[in-house]
Amino acid sequence: MAPIKIWNRPDSYRSPVAVVNRAKVGKLTRDNIPLSTTHVSQYSCPSTCQFLNAGCYAEWQGMQPFTTKRLNSNETTNRSTLAKLEARAIRAELDGKADLRVHVVGDCATTTAASLVGSAMVYHTSRHGKRAWTYTHAWKTVKALAWQGAQVLASIHNTRDFHKARAQGYKTFALATAERHPTHKVYTDTATGLRVLPCPAQFKHANGSKVACVDCSICQDPNVTRKAGADCVGFQPDALKKVVAGGGGVTKAVRNDT
Image (cartoon, rainbow, N blue to C red; front, side, top):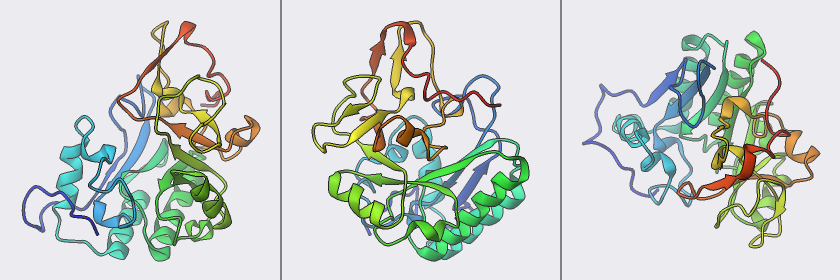
């Protein structure tokens, strides 16, 4: 596994898992719309992830690196143990009254880990009907069935990844694009040939409006990309922004439920 960034030598007093019942306003949420999140030590991630210690947004963006390094500093590195702690926290520490974004940092790199966390995600939704979703780079070795019916997007980087992940049973996909989105509508990615539905949160709208994860259903609902005629949701490099005149063009992605 690539070297994991920590604050100091492994310790026992920093937890390797953090769950937040109500996330702060930012890219994920806005105003007073609640959103729950989980954060887990990067020792939970597959060693094959090309972003691990090599550009993962959880290592450099905003204040997140402080949380990431704190979690990584715990002496617990066993993936099954980390998954058990996370699943237990989802069930016990969250009230289930908000949508849940699992793994702002972290992943489930084994079938056992995915089963534990996936079951907890399904339980979260069963309480009050709130959605739970996450992304995984572990799709090469962890089949979709391991997640126990939870909504999980396979994080892919090329056409070969897309077909291999689909063969593993995944139905929704997140593509890390190499360049900025050329439009706010569905487009064909020139590098992969895949039809991409761009993440609306990555657009700065001319009228000042902003779309956050709590407004959108692209990642939470496995049917959205299919209905839009796309193969995957696309995420351009975080440093890039694009202005959309009038702030329109994302109505298909915006949720209308409460």
